[in-house]
Image (cartoon, rainbow, N blue to C red; front, side):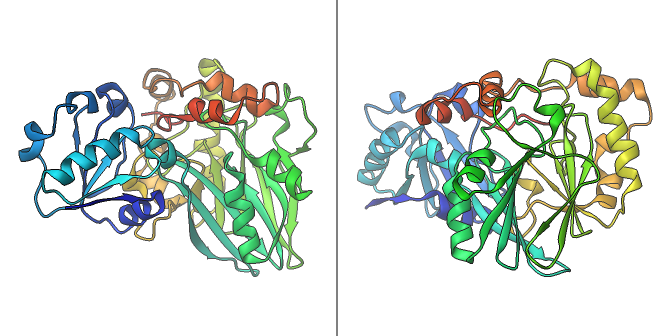
Length: 375
């Protein structure tokens, strides 16, 4: 038999199309338990590679015959070794090129829709990390919202579309991943926007993203309306685009709500979070399509791979938007929190411009799942 490399972009397409896939994950149990590749029709078997050094005989009957098999490890090396063993044992297998390290960085562009006043909106889905970034395109110009540190993905996409990036926005100071917004702005001579209440400690210049502002993209006035919506961070700011889309940052997700504790001020910010979700958002049109900065589980993906749902639907279905008691809400968002994101303090300092870690260190800081939501 044989074994070949599978690239992250191929794996992403399989997850989007809900194909069946059997994954043998050869990382240690703790790494697998903390973070794994997820999808609607994915099955897993976790056996650390060091338990297979003498061969794969003991797991042969746990691996399905006639199913597509993918071997996964942290950086690729161990999965190549185990794939070769499985191939010698008669299985046709693939290994994930670059391992979970590559999977964490892959982003898949998905077209969300055409804008009413001309132009297009794209969502960049980072399946391995649960991050969502955006690009608004109109008449030769573009704006990028909540970009990740893999800035080439956005600049290359803009080049393919023949547009110039004029603006880069961060809806808040991110704590679970390193922002690429400032780098994109510097590379493209664009403006970098950040809510000033989240920028009190930053050491670089920025444009203040504040409620009531309009920013046009292209000659066909596409307006991005800033809507101050504190709670996840004190400066968290939502954007209403083309009177159709509501970019909620990490305040509101499809199946959950944002956690208010990543600056150590959960008790102080709970009221802000509730006011945003239960009052400020209630004043908006329920027809607005919510586009968050993260997703938690692959079940939140639509059939086309996008993560989006009408605000009115979330008011009806999202538990975090349907808690009548202030006390119960406070308890939910202060007692049902997942572990803090890996290296979140260092990530915040990086996003403030206080430190500039080497690229490999940045990768290490981001490894692991998205943890921006209340469970």
